[in-house]
Figure 1: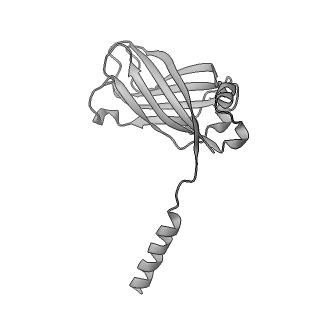
Figure 2 (figure 1 turned 90 degrees about the vertical axis):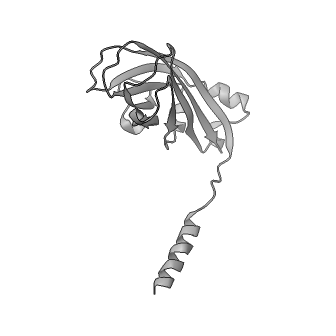
Figure 3 (figure 1 turned 180 degrees about the vertical axis):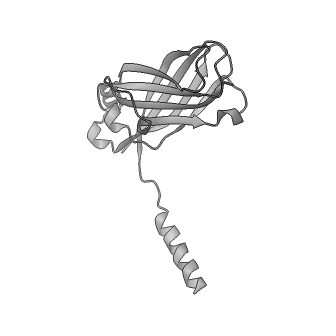
Amino acid sequence: MKQLVYILLTVLIFAACRRDNREPLFDLAYPNFRFTIEAGQNPILPGAYAIRGIATNIGFFLTHNHTDTSSISDMSPYTATLRCLDGFDYVFMEGVSVRICEDGTDACTPADEVFYIDQLQRYPEDDRIDLLPGLRNVKRDLSRESYRLEIVVFFAFSPPANYASQLDMVFRAYR
């Protein structure tokens, strides 16, 4: 009986493992989002930095790559980097959440997260943080004319100085 269970589980595992059939079409780069993390912020509450009205430039990307939105199945977060322009390290941070949503008056929700990192206190001190991509399909948001970007910073303790920071993001479109 045990052998039958093992054989059945092996067959199920191999049946569930399929190759990713998505074909990458092009990258959408959104560099140079600058903001300042101010000194002395309350470490209990996260710091939120919102930038509204960011142009998606979807027309440029589609024209440059000779395609249209109907041939795109999804747009996924690919890579993002947060850098301190002053050369300071981010030792005071516990985590970062980058969110994009429809450009409007409403704030983004945690479900709108595209990049993140947590437990930064375990990593070596550095002035650059490579964020992890989320699993969210952002085709709807990046197919519009503009979007809202929110950078939510979770503090381990209060920032000791002002930190001029820059966020660079890249998304990838797939067929």
